[in-house]
Length: 107
Image (cartoon, rainbow, N blue to C red):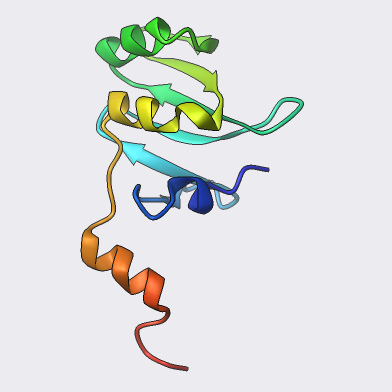
């Protein structure tokens, strides 16, 4: 399974997706989550017609299409472009530095 925290590289916010077994990168117009079919890949749920149109323009494989939203599968190499289209939330700089330096309070 794809490790979302290492893919995000401390740049994008990674949070629990609420299902209890997965992580996602949330955005203003959708979310990126792990998806695997014969290898490591990611998927994005685009929740605006503009984001759907732009992601389709990248040539991504459509997993599911609905009214005003769609799910696409893509390679981790395209993460920066997909994150920009959905407006992925970024980590704040102090949070990045704190995570690099270790726990806030020693145990």
